[in-house]
Length: 140
Image 1 (cartoon, rainbow, N blue to C red):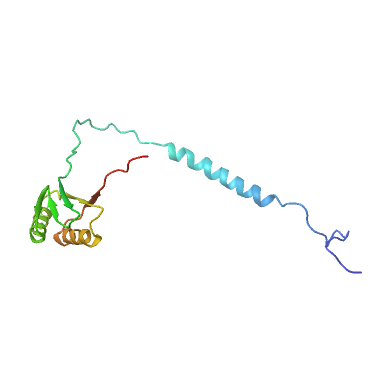
Image 2 (cartoon, rainbow, N blue to C red):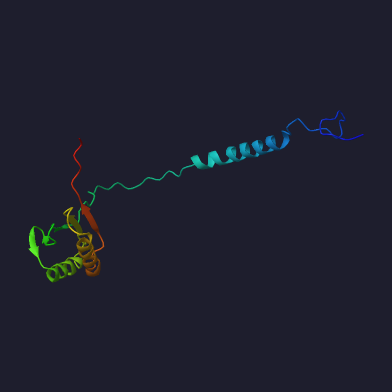
């Protein structure tokens, strides 16, 4: 007589009931953990803290405006400068405290290499904060 999984023999038949014991054990353990930890989380130490009044220090660091025009010329705060003067001013600005942010404006027609030159001059001079300034697109 061949044994098949669908035979009527109770010893070799498929088990069609889910064993709920491990599930109940896990749920009881989780319930106990939550019951123990919830009072511990709500326990607070009451301390009478001293009162002080002070204003927050909201000093914004200065920023440097550097623009690269379409022809590749560089403007420092609106005034044209040469590459060597730019490097000298960046090095001078990098030593001030707090260090200023460099706001870089580039014309859309300027070659990327020129913008990369200004960024590498800023990094070599010691400026760590560089931001790109763009104009928002007009919604059509």
